Length: 80
Image: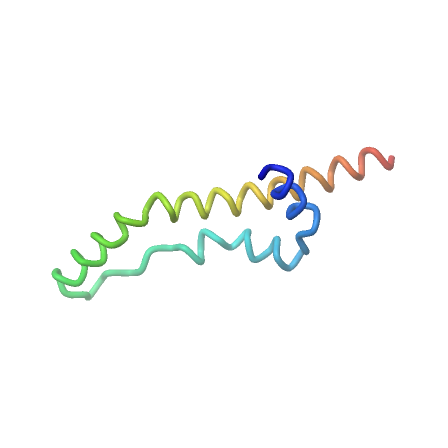
C-alpha cells in the first residue's frame, strides 16, 4: 500500500497538487445561519457520523501534497 501511495505522489501534477491544497475549503462545513433548528440538528447529526472520514480525507490530501514537495526538494538536492 505504501509503495502505491509513493507512486501516486511521484505522478501527481501541479494542478492536482493545487486542488489537494484546497481540500480544507472544499470540505468546509456549511453555514447553518438562518436555517431552521430542526434542519441544523439533522445536519449536525449527519456531520458527526462522517467527521472522522472528513478529517482522514483532509489529512490524506495534506500528506500527499507534503510528500510531493519533499520529493521535489530531495530531487533538486540530489541534482545539485
